[in-house]
Amino acid sequence: MPARELGSEGWHKPWSGGNGGSCVEAMRLTDGRVALRQSTDPDGPALIYTHLEMKRFIQGAKAGDADFLFL
Image (tube, rainbow, N blue to C red; front, side):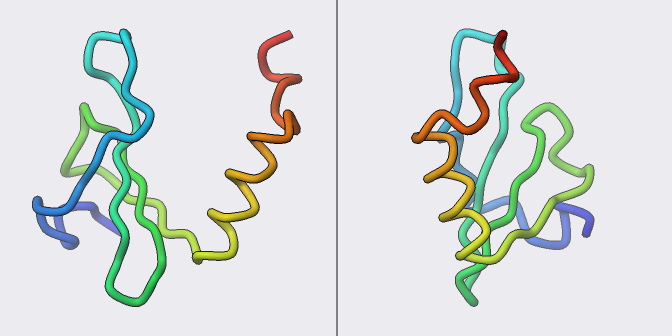
């Protein structure tokens, strides 16, 4: 879905780092789903995930399930 359809208020940068401002922004939607967008393209697409999908993703990241991406 186009991120602009979700409005400009309520976006947060929970994973912002020293990358020159290019990061993922997240927004919790009123129905509990989570929207993600690229901060450098706020009018671009937003990916929408259910609460359970985001919970499992974060749990997996904490458990090291994605560490293979850094090897």
